[in-house]
Image 1 (cartoon, rainbow, N blue to C red):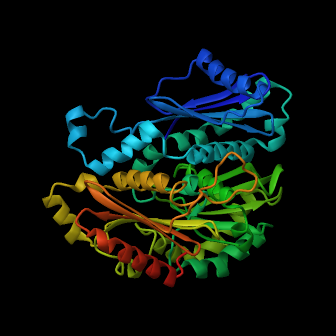
Image 2: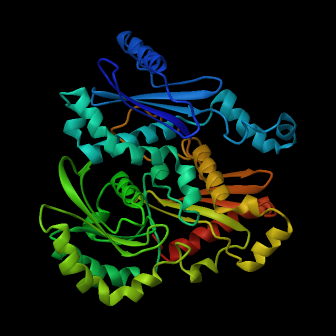
Image 3: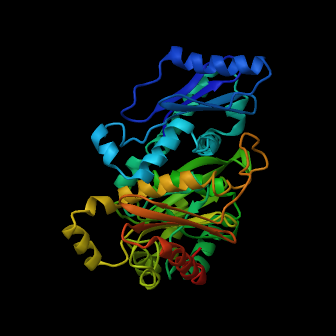
Length: 459
């Protein structure tokens, strides 16, 4: 994915922030000046430079409010293939070679995903410092100082694979899909109706949610009405708080609803777990204070249902009853509902100890670790969405070319696994299967999975 993100002023090209992925050399000032210079040269000639590709890198530019420019630099090579010996490359699967060749030489993977990353970063900046301070700044030094508060969330976009390894059973796809990651539990409706709504009302807010390990478990109606990108950014911001932070009160701006007027994001940890636990969050006004919410409302609303909250801390985001209905060859899936801006991912092998032991005997456990599945699912999503499947419509974004012909299914057969993607109604389903799965059976299996998930109304 992206290796560098640069934010500069649109009129003078002054750097406001630069962030680099760990292990990548920092961007030098002359190189940043060159990237801005070629963009400015095109603008002066009446041309809009949006992207370019070199042998090793891809660069995209995007201007926001004619005030700041975001530059995203990404590698054109698969990060694992860089250090892979040539002999191993020749022995790799032909489909994998074709995928890498098309990615590096003909650049068939669309720029849309990098533009989406730029949008995520810009809206994260708006969320943390507000649109007025960001695009109507009077002092460069003051803006640079304010932008320091955004370093953590920007770095999380660049280090998404590292974040995945720290949260192996809880990968987040919101930055990729611009939909909020959700968890499914039978306790959700009870907790929402009987406790969350009343808790939010007591805090003087219509916006409230319960988050389990970074995933949205349940929320009030007003919270669900937020834009998909706002939902994803709020969940990402909440997930970045370490487990040691049990209470927080920070100002946030909603990029679409209120980009200039801040709300208070009050977060309280109800159940502590290594990956964050169960947290209740509300968006409220100046009153009541954080101390008052802790002392008056937390114990009275959430104390009686501690056992219910504990039952929400499951290792997988879907109920066991649903897991038992999934095909045994399924390794992982990502379900996206583009109508209500929600997505659900699943990684744990559904066959239990029997399948795990069989894979150990085959000495292929490393292939099926959650971090490996996450990488492959992300790669598959990027290769399909924007090419075979259209990108979600965005009327305000003119930088993206619409896909002329939209497919309804897409499959790939690689050396270690197989992939199948399906579009039906408002759903997009991306599934990974073991290499033993018959190719002709993948469409039927994927349709079966979608039927199980949509029947249970998990999203």
